[in-house]
Length: 500
Image (cartoon, rainbow, N blue to C red; front, top):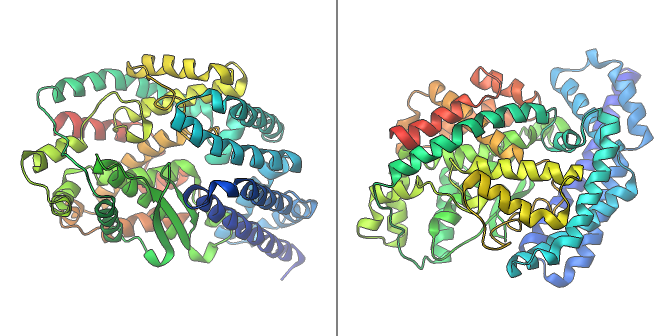
């Protein structure tokens, strides 16, 4: 082994240490959201800040910089996966090296505090409780963006976006989102007109939390989720956390509406399957991580939207749902429940939104977080700006902050630049599911029979196991024959909501 090869091996050791520490932080974040008593908040914030500082110092060290330079000089000696790993190492180093340790620590402390305050503010529907702490998180994000801009040579927003979707630019998103904005308003009116001619009934509860949980676990098992390497819990906001060998996903239960928890569970299961199926041989290396949040969201939305709201899946699932809740009568008929799952409406809450209106929720947040970061929108003016945007895009105005700008945890958690990946993921999900249908001629029959292994195996081969070997568009081109476009998503919406 040459000295240059040794540099790469040393980098693998250092990045493994960073990954293990980051995994510990992920479990602590899960505990913070699921089990930790409120009295532990200060201690937990200190723990997370310290772990964040340690991981930052490992990657941003001069040693890593020197090793990267040395390893890159002999990149031709590396395998395809090793070369891609080295590329991803450099990408991580650039992000970490752009920030000073005191800024990393300050952000960790600020977001831990802000997330806890957000819970109370949302419960009280009072944005004023959150305003000061959210203002600090936004201010720190502005500092981070400025520092990263100098390293990456891009706009402030793109510098933060790159943390969640490497290589993605807001200019590219603007083109895709404009296509959607031109299409969705008229399409939404058509769908609402079509659905107005029939009634949709919500089955009456209460629906036992225990039964909802058992049903969710049954569907997770059918979708091949490995319970030896993961678990399902409850949190204020559904999420998937943990690490690939210990995936922690959460949902929330509403006793008056079983569909919310069930679809939330299926959504997070898509995320969890992606994590569980990442290549074990590249565990703890950057190339072994998921390929950005757009691809991650594509996997959750493929399961929740493309698969689980399709007529084939409902043909399999509705008898199980009726049996679980002992449902009888017209409200529980296949026709009514299918219409319920396909119901489109102008709603306030993003996580409960249907496929047609969901992108409009994301476009609103995309606009607002750009304005917050640039300083064009002050934090104190966020509620009013939010309400104005909802009126413009969806034709409705939230009656309070809980149904408005307090509904999401992302900004209190410091995640500015994340939101567009939801709709990029929806587009990718439609494109990937369409390709899977072409590759698996019997897919519809398999889904109707409750046999999901062929689909998951195909996803594992073409998406999950690829990890970060290629860019998002590179993966999509290999799996679907095209880079990310809006076409498949629009075709899917038309087929499901106008033609079916």
